[in-house]
Amino acid sequence: MRLFIPLAVLIIATPAFSQELDLDFDSFGFDENSEITFDTLPETGMEVSATVSLSYSGIGALNQSSAAQISLANEHSLGTLGFLEWAANATIIDYDIEFDLSRIHLQNSTGNFSWKLGKYRIGWGEIEGAPVLDVVNALLSFGDVNLSSDELPGQWFIGLDYFASSVTVSSFLGIVPGVSHAIPATDSTDIEVGIKASLPIESGSVNLYAARLVPQSGVVDIHSDTSHATPYVLAGFSTNRSFGDMLFEVDVASKFGLQRSTATALSYHNRIDAALGVEYAASNTMQVTAAVSGQHWLEQSEDYFEFDGYLSTQNAANYIVGVSEELMDGKLSVSANILGTLNNNVNVTALSASYSYSDRLEFGASAMWLSAETGAQFEAMDGYEQYGLTSKFHF
Image 1 (cartoon, helix red, strand yellow):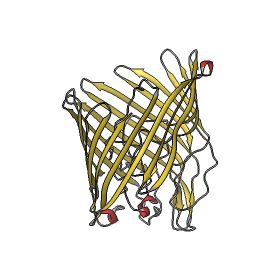
Image 2: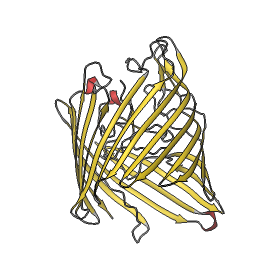
Image 3: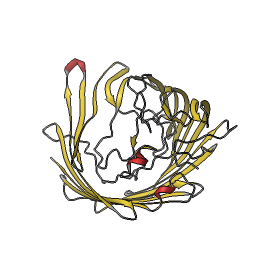
Image 4: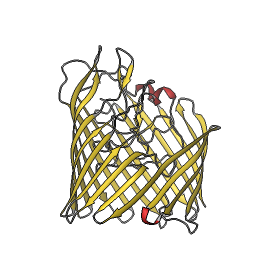
């Protein structure tokens, strides 16, 4: 059974595995660097933060890795043109320097309409850690970074929203889709387009989705050893409703025209993805979350293969359970997450903690362990572990 919920805790790994999987590093709440995001701008108008990290990871013997990062963010009023916002960072990872403009967009509104143009992120779906509908953003890959920034990188979009009295309609056009390929391939030149309608209900909301999307990960034809990213069509539904201290969430999506590889060629197939999530506010400082996700291919007439040679099963299901709490008047935050496949052949345990020494200085620690049975897709990583320490200063 394939573990298709993003393994956010597997942030540092070998290059071989970075080619096999696409992973969303903060989609289920565990941040290996235990960083926080500063939502309010200081008096200078510029957000500036510096982070350093030391981590140890591996199977059997642990390898040391270090990183340092400077992050910047700002916003500018352009009068009648609207507001320009941007965020960027420079990272040094084991003496290699990387620069990234993670976000830059111009936005404005008039009447019942709002528009946004530039590089940013779009999130669909209600359930964190279950990418049933959140298929718009490009995912980071195994080993891409070992130090997260305050923001994950976005993609280039043109967005238009319409606000009515009882419904909100959001649409987008993706002009440069991001695709991760396991082997060298030509980037997709297809565009993405999507629309979402949100309707309020008692103590919750209902959302409808329709889109033409490019896969986040290229599909490898194992016969020709080529990678492809052909657009597919998505029709989806999500809803959430609270009952006292409990919040229930459901995501469902039908995906038409997804590619799969047989032993001789690629073929097109349809799939249904679904997830059920629950959030429970145990107290003012403690939150418990749980989710189950599954996918079902509507046709399985022959053997289909993943890039790494493993058989692609007709059904797959995964789980995630997490608990987080704030202590010492919010200065100390701790979290624990357990996730894996429902057949229990892959399991991940992750722990993290962060301590705010002051408004400007924070320290963090994390640990993660993975186990995988023989024959599972992650069997080569059985026994993988990771430990990390980090400090962050906000100017």
